[in-house]
Image (cartoon, rainbow, N blue to C red):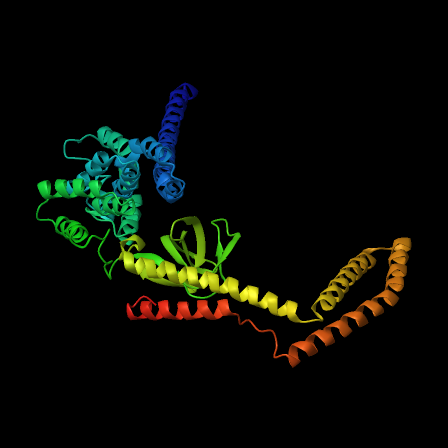
Length: 446
């Protein structure tokens, strides 16, 4: 009887243990499910942020290469996620406006610009992140609250990312009127007066009291009243162009490869400025009177940076700047020519040049054999040692010939006052350059 009574008790105890185990594992599974959902949601949100931001980061390259349709398509592909990241919309909108302006689709550009003015964008904070997890009062049961938490997890996570994007917008000085600002800059760059008139007409109709409308109205009046393309740039305007300070300033392409040397006074239209390992750099176009070389890179320390846009300058001033750059280039060429002529005037120049070439060829061959000798072993090493021994008597004659030719060459240079760089052309160009620089100095542009 005793065993019969204990059997049900053992069964009951076993059932309770199983129930406790199930509850314990169930809680673990729930926590694992929640953690897994949070990880996947976080990764998904960050991936969406990356893909939405990617075309914005590459926008300058697309615009520089005039790949407007490709850029617009890239922006359109990520538009389904833009509601998650409203802080990116100002940047996205200004880029789209620049594309449509360059395509001369002014209506579309103005539609986006006007939407930026009329829509109020609010910066999201960390408190918005916290509120994103709190369900509304209508959600009461525990199951419904858990379901709400899972389904609405992405939005509060995106809020944290938006807070960072908002800081970037502040750094870029983006505001409600940035769309119209970028639109007018593109139209000014294209000298599209009809487009500017259309923008002014729309702003006068829908935003007559706005400071932007008044500024654009004064701008257009300045064009009509003075006959110039644009008024003088504002002193608070961003860096828009630059002047090369010194002769033979190195210019590079965007990959960092050497491109050319620019003479003093050369003009660069600035597209953007960046930090680099070598210091701040300027990326833009090297400007000539009737052409340009785009995609040049120069160190900011080698340039005099100017505010405003280059094409906004008075035509008479532009002419003086181009003239200065042209005279400086011609002067460098004339000085190089004078140096060559002076070198040819030395009666020992030809002999010295020949002796120098023979000396360099001998040294190059000697260095080559020496390098092979150092790494060789056995018979090979003995072979290179013999070659060096045979080369030594010949090298004595070549070196003596070089020293004698150099001595005669340098003695003539010293007796005749050194190598002169003066020529009638150099003198004439120097006088013209000094005159134009004096005029630019009086105008405050030197």
